[in-house]
Image (cartoon, rainbow over all chains, first blue to last red; front, top):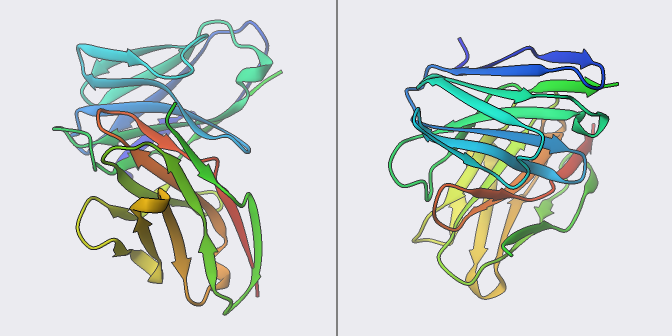
Length: 115
Length: 112
């Protein structure tokens, strides 16, 4: 079984709809991250969480919110989806302790299309 | 602002050709460096990483990378590519804290 799972894998929605993307991990990691990937732009950090009580904005958090329901679960929400949020979304985890040098483990991604 | 630059967005090679993908970063302090690979339809996975010590690091599948501090570079190399190396490659830099900065990626296509 995959260590980091994301649901759904694909989603098509309309402008203005609320969307939730879910991420679960069995690695026991404290750190979790949400990224979006756009062609030619690489991965950009949306939100990250050190533990259940600690959530931080990344570089492109506008239009997004997150919820860390448990150590193993980290959800990303688009309150009112817009077309420029069409992208591939990745969840990732990393080990506790200082983050320097820590490898991140990625989920399979969710391809979101906003019409 | 800290940034990571990957010089080639698309690279096309024939099998057995040598590969070098460029990566430069902008940060004057201590860094940890990574190369991740994303095979078609799969999630990102770690190819190799540099923390300290020998600046030439070896990763999986015959890949290696060299950290040249004076050039702020961490180029990825492979002496002889295979069709199965077709993928997108991302350079990433951690400068401390919990944020890792990713480059824009290089799409490699290897012709059989």
